Image (cartoon, rainbow, N blue to C red):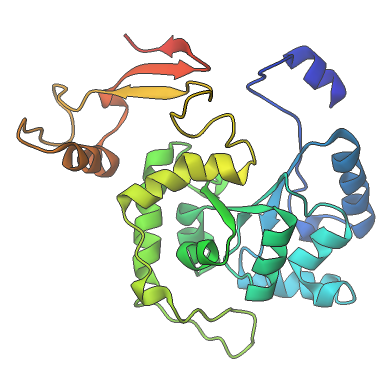
Length: 269
């Protein structure tokens, strides 16, 4: 890890990370040693947490003596629940676990596309945000169909809507019950925030990236919403928020005319 840092130098675009697959594939000894490495090198941690009901039950069967066999407690006991930890999913987190994550400074990366496919549930993003948890969005790559963040932004809006009409059997007490979701609407603007500044906050690097504040690195896309053969209509009478909504909901790489990373133009015309 130190060698990688030395090679990358200052302002590195890629940094080392401790990334156990998830608890069912790891022994407690392995997780503890990874926790020691994370502390020694002060690096980020990434894993999956409370993704599916089956996974939650399996972890309980594997390690019932550690925090009642719950993911958050196990990551805490092994030194992996840190302010540089980002855990994918978080579909089946209980409120006391969310509160513990808030205290630790760790975060969740909601992966709505993957959750539709595998979790039989969705991350209660607005509920978790209300409790103070840092949340970004993720593609889950192998668990989804694209590494493009725009489909994930759109899926986050849809996932929020499903909470109004999808119910689960909660008799086994594995699935948390949230009472305030009906007035907690995620729109395209909030979903886009989750994919940008929300993600930077989840990674604990929002002082460097995630928005156009003075002093931050200039990471940007230049979007042209009046391109030939694009997927949506453009009207000069449209206000900026309408144009932005059209691009978030229907735009794609045909609209991207410039890409900057750390102030350097790296793509497009």
